[in-house]
Amino acid sequence: MKTKTDKIFDHIDEMYEVISNHNYDYEKSRSELFNLLKIVEDEELDKDFSYYQLIGTLEYFICKSTVKNAPYKCLLLKNEKLEKYFNASLALDKNNPPLQYLYGLYLYEIGDFVNAKYEFSKINIQYFEELEIFERIFKIEEMIICCKIFLKEACEYNIINFIKEIEKTEDRFYPTDLIETLKYNEDYFTGKIRSELEIIKKEPKTLDSSL
Image (cartoon, rainbow, N blue to C red; front, top):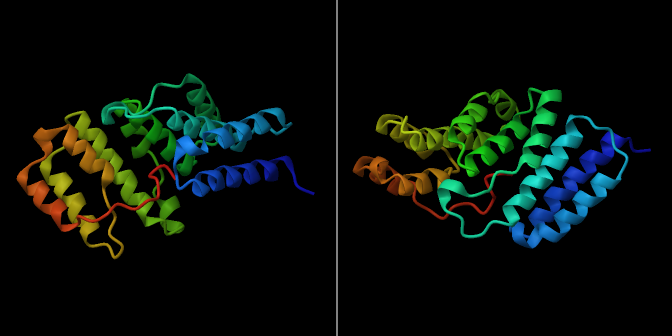
């Protein structure tokens, strides 16, 4: 017989299956995500870190489904309900790299680059190393650089070093957010950086950065 915690993780799997079935199109996933959120809210589940993580993540994906054609510097609107659930989960489990990553993305997407940088910087990278999810490690490093660019704290040397680092990988990581950030901050888009990016230029992967 499944425990209440088992049910929560089943719902987490269901949530990602919905998004995957719609090729990571949040707008097309919206109605199913809303239905799943209602089911979770109506069920008698233990209010542990995984419950708040599930509710917060559902709110995050629903939030992403309602914003179209937003400027890159502010992709989402601030959502206090989402923040409440994420913070409740992190208060119960302070070392939760997947949730810290999602929360960092949310902060970045609402334009809170100071707190996004802080959230990304405190993630325990070893968690992803042990799972051999190296693309996620590059993504975290990329997002920290993007935050620094918006905060005018980045330098050309560090950006180029990161690009050279991903050039060496077997399955080349495509820095979509870095490129968009540089387009938005043209003073950082130097000739040297453009030249390095040309080397890794290819079609970006379809997998959404938040997954």
